[in-house]
Length: 435
Image (cartoon, rainbow, N blue to C red; front, side, top):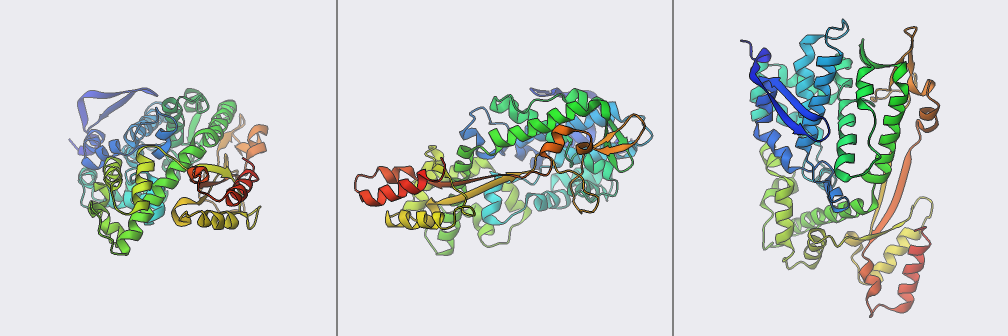
């Protein structure tokens, strides 16, 4: 039998706290799950440093990837099956893309990418097309199948209906991570009626539409996403841990370039320092390995690397204050000057961070964007963009929420030897920043 159409002799299921079960019948999907590149995702947390704030947030990108696959499987097997606008020949393609969409994420993704200028989307493509177990499985379907999967993930595949199932403003990726992250963090914000949304999704040429009767379920979904970003994804304490992580990697890179002799050599990072990273180097890294290095570096002679590593491992995080350098020109620079007088290396201990997100990006006909708006199908067949019909979505559409924080080591201000006048000026600047 043709490999693409092979079914398992008996359906395999993964017990899942969000979707109850993840169902696998296709031999290709089962083989992909068993590859070392996909199994690596068990060792990459879905929410990075958020486990240091919400102690239940230990779930992995493996969990999430299976969840996205299951949402897409339900859409194409239960909702789209038999509809003339849906091409059944693209079923396996979109299932593979859903399963593998996060394959290139590195350990503690955002901080890692920031320091080493890597791109998880680039490495997803390299893993899909390189000399990997994943590529070998995909090539058994057809020679061009790995490239097609990569195109879906990169949003360049010709049928944008397929792309929109995993990359749009109401896609399987978001529908899984909102519910999964809410479950594991223990918050109530990310819950919405996914069952209702799936029931009212319809395939149309080049896009997915939502029956207008399901608009309120979509509104609930968008508000859930908005609240999750404010309360979980942008949590200032999680960002403090990311600042530490960022600065540990930055210090390691700086020391390496200075010729510093490490007690524990960062051998797994050398290709990253020298900008000649291979796929093999990349997939060797996971969060277990990074934390092992951090524990070792707690004993390094370099006081900055040792201190930063100990802070991260033992959760001695930086404190923060609200401070937007754009609105308060000169305040951040003055704060850095004063901390330097207090003996603080501000390259590693004072950090300005800004986060931002659009809860919903509405459609503008004359504006080029790679974001898929959410379309409603009206009872008369007319297609309308969501914010044209929803007062709630229209109120928040296109509104960028930004949050500025400055992170610093609070214990410096507790040093009894610190000059009182210097301490008073620092505290005044911190307190005047709105926290």
